[in-house]
Amino acid sequence: MKNKPPYAIESVDHALHLATLLQQENSLGVAEAAERLGVSRSTAHRLLAMLVYRDFAEQDADRRYRAGPVLRPGDATSAPVSLLRRAALPHLEALVAKQRETANLMVLAGTQALFVASVEGDQVLRVGDRAGRALPAHLASGGKALLAALSPGELAERYADAGDAVDLPRLRRELALVRKRGFALNDGLTEAGLTAVGMAVPAENGAPAAAVSLAMPSARFDRDLLPRWVAALSATTTAIEEALRPQ
Amino acid sequence: MKNKPPYAIESVDHALHLATLLQQENSLGVAEAAERLGVSRSTAHRLLAMLVYRDFAEQDADRRYRAGPVLRPGDATSAPVSLLRRAALPHLEALVAKQRETANLMVLAGTQALFVASVEGDQVLRVGDRAGRALPAHLASGGKALLAALSPGELAERYADAGDAVDLPRLRRELALVRKRGFALNDGLTEAGLTAVGMAVPAENGAPAAAVSLAMPSARFDRDLLPRWVAALSATTTAIEEALRPQ
DNA sequence: ACGTAAGATTCTGCTGTGAAGAACAAGCCG
DNA sequence: CGGCTTGTTCTTCACAGCAGAATCTTACGT
Image 1 (cartoon, rainbow over the protein chains, first blue to last red):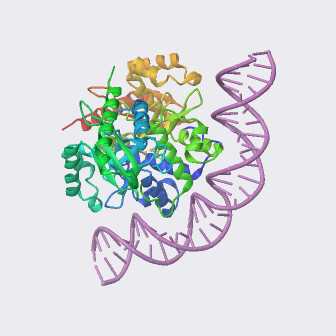
Image 2: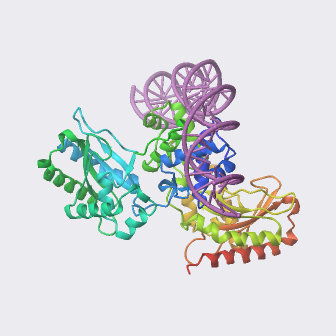
Image 3: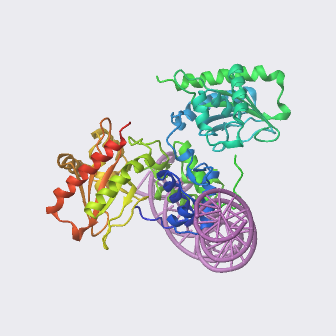
């Protein structure tokens, strides 16, 4: 065991320790977590709530907690994220220079869509940098684009524990539409006044590793401009795919 | 983004957010981490130190920080840890019932050996439950047994950043001896008065997923009994291997 | 070789945040 | 249905976590 740091933070230590316990156990209840950490049940419950909030844990229907997407082996998107980021950034920047709206690079982690990179548009009213954040995949435009590329079995498995939180038949119908049109929309689902168009980065073999979304204030969303944004997204995602190809 | 929990813990939130940033970035410096979190540099440094302590981060020679073993895709040991644990526990218990010393199940994560499961012996003086802990792999008996099964390239890669902390030529000689004898010893290297014998669980294809160690007070370690412990470990690791085979 | 700037690390004082105890809610079993 | 166990919510308070300052380390330019 390493030496504890000279300026240790006890609350952080408990949380990280609990995360590693979750990674190793099948599942943990609050009382057991409390005992393992040597803290009260209320403290253990708060720590678990934080781990759930940041996707290090998930809570099952039986109220027990288990490891969340951050701690689980990589999803189908096993391309290293920093490599994705590096390959995609110039193309995101080019997209933003032309369209002047904020562009995002997103990946799937469990049922969440993670923002890996953001390049902000330069207009005064704009969507901000969301890099490092996560949204429910079934609501975000990039998340939907990635979900649309999953097989029915993979989708069912990802949402096996979703219960009533997600209307699966309705999601399936929406994803079929996404596949037909080639892009996905998020119109105020994750933030009032924000509209985004998302498209998956194509992949020759296997599931797409990432998606690109163009996000703007709903006030500037214009259906007549949709074909132009879709064309721009298509060019960008194709360019990113080529940048990701092994040389 | 999920709703923040009603009783959020701000320090924990910062740490977990920083961990996810590390997972996404190639590397981060202290100042950049501070800016990303909106905290002072001293706070960011303390958080990073905690992440390093719990293996969520590692610090490079250039003083920057990157994701640690907990956050990285699984090692060669990609078998889910909870599955390993479930398969191994009955056999660990049988081993302990016969030998009356504490048995551990260990896996490799980077250059650390993680204790996945422990079953304590029933004698008054005994080695305690170390489940959830990590030791330097090159010192722990189970860690050595797993390192001995790595190719020279893999070993070099794992210890590429070890600097002077590990005498690599000496470690290589020791691992060659482990391979020859089939077991590894830890005689007081990780805890004064504690001696352990470790053996890898065989694997038909690829590197062993785990190792088993039998740990006892050094006062009870008897070289005349070594063949008996080695035979018992061999039976246990073989039984675990069979339990892990796809049905 | 020296000076400077940038970034990492260490230290300390203070206040507001994190922990725990109590109360409440939920689930399970006889 | 009642009792017990376990998860969740709430409140109080003291001490732990934060930030600013000081110090250390490293890299670069002259």
